[in-house]
Structures are given as C-alpha cells and as structure tokens.
Length: 318
Picture (cartoon, rainbow, N blue to C red):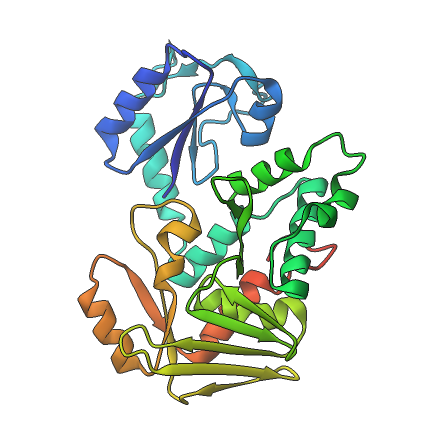
C-alpha cells in the first residue's frame, strides 16, 4: 500500500497529518511538495494537506472544490472543522483501502502497472514513441524520436519525460537519460529478448520479457537463466505459439515490501526457474520477498495483460 501526502511549502497542517498517520500505521509515508495549481491537478491535491492511498484521495467529498494549492480543512467524527483527519478516520480509510487491495501477486502487478499508465495525450504518445524506439533499435529514444510528439504541445521533452518518470511509466537516470521503459531496460539484464531475429533488447524481468511478444505482435526469443544455478532458460514465441526449455520452467513473481518504483522493489525478483523445486528453494531462502510461483500459462497471460495493450492507440488500460 502506498501512502503519500501532498502539501504546499511550509504547510502548518502537514505535521498533524503525519503524526496521526504514524499513530495509525508503520507503513512508509512519502510527502510531495506542490507549489502551483498545475501540479495540484496533475497529482490530485484538493488542498493542503491531501492524503493519497494508492493514488486515491479517501476524503473526497461530494461538491468539494477543484484541485489547487489552497489550505484544506476536514471535519472530524463530530462534524468539527479540523486541520487533518482524526486518528480514527485515518485508520478507517487505511483499513478500507486494505480490504480492496488486489488478492494475488498477479493482480497487484496488474494494478501497479495500470496506475503507471499515462493519461495525458502528449505523455501517452511520448511513452509509445519510447517503446517503439526500444523495439526498433534496442536503445532508448533519441531527441528526434520525441520531437514530433512534443512539438507544438507547449511542453519540453524534459517536462514530458519527468512526468512519465513520476508515474513510473519510465525511469530516468541521474543525467536525465531514459534508463527504463517497462518492459525494456537500457542496460543489460539477465533477460535478453531477440525480436524477429533482428533486434536484441533487454527486459526488466521475466514477466516483462514475456510481455514483449504480445505487445509487438512479433516473434521473440527470450534467453534467461535460473538465478540459483545459472542454467539457461529459453522461451520461444513463433506465430503466437510459445515453447519453453526446459519444459518444466516456471516464473516467480514477488516484491520487496518496502515499496517504491517497480524497477527498485520488484523487477529483480521476477525471474525464471528451471522447475518448481528450484523456485521453492529460492523462496525459502528469501522469506522477506512475498510472492508466488506461476506456471507457464499464467506467466504468459500476465505478461500479455500487463503489456499487450501498450501500443494500442485507443486502449490505454488493461
């Protein structure tokens, strides 16, 4: 569960919000400074401070004003105007959100990547241009790849890329270059994918690798390895038919409970294993990584669900 508090600079009501959240939960709480109305609309701040639970404001009321940088007031259980929700209200909001959490790791990943999809038309077009550049060259998009997308939009390439980074559609390196555009990695990983016997790319994880064929509607050859033994594992997709070697190979999906961008907390844990015994041995040795083992059909279905729609011009969500 992701908890984030949006606030204006020097908001006097930020401290009460954070203190009450600390009394309710030991989950990490991030904060984000919002200093203009455009950012308030982008991130969903309906006054300062605003709590988002998994990106949703649980205290939105009918008739509430639009997003902006104004001060926000709340009403407690007794109807009194207060600077932040009460401990009881916060506990109820977090509990309710937890009850609606996805029930399986696959559903968690699907919900996670769904929240990362850009909705703004310029950002969506830039995201698709980045994915196509990776697929065509094996490398991140160059400035000229994005020029047709951002030209005339009133937004710089840097602004658009930062927006995609913020929603975790891509990850930027410290120098501002594209390091990740799920499912692709700009640097070598243990999952290499050959597209149509022409272009070699690297995938962020096993599920990302499996998502490339349905995303591109193209034949692929995945070359990976069992993280415990180093034994090679290949997955070949030709004409929509997929075969695995070894025949008993499986995929483990899980995530570090600390949270954060996919690249930091889950991609390293989504791996191929030669068989279920090898995967179970790894999970036993890593009890801090909750997750599950998927058979080949379920792993392929999850990859298609997460990535198969990304280059569809009209459908932006699974």
